[in-house]
Length: 121
Image 1 (tube, rainbow, N blue to C red):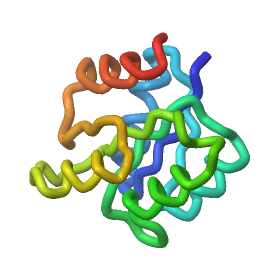
Image 2 (image 1 turned 180 degrees about the vertical axis):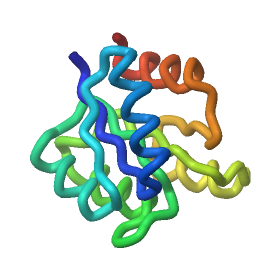
Image 3 (image 1 turned 60 degrees about the vertical axis):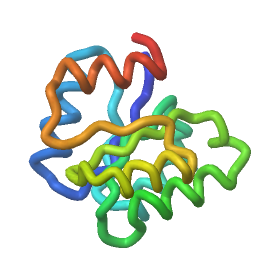
């Protein structure tokens, strides 16, 4: 079973997204901010990271930067999960090394399809 690290500070979005991914047979490890996400990533080594951008402690861009600097995470798919549909934010994330992004609110099928594209089922 593929393990997804979900880093999202909004509890309702975090819980709903966790449930959607678990129903699609992914194992989800959830973090409520970037600092917790970093600690979990380093110990759990997930197959994919789904990360909000605007969060307390460490934002998504900084989390991506920290993880990409470590050889263990050079190839780990990192997807931004953001309410910001601004092209500048999307371009900044992709330039920083993110593999893809999904804009909130999202369609459940779209989320599952995107995650599956990077880690399979």
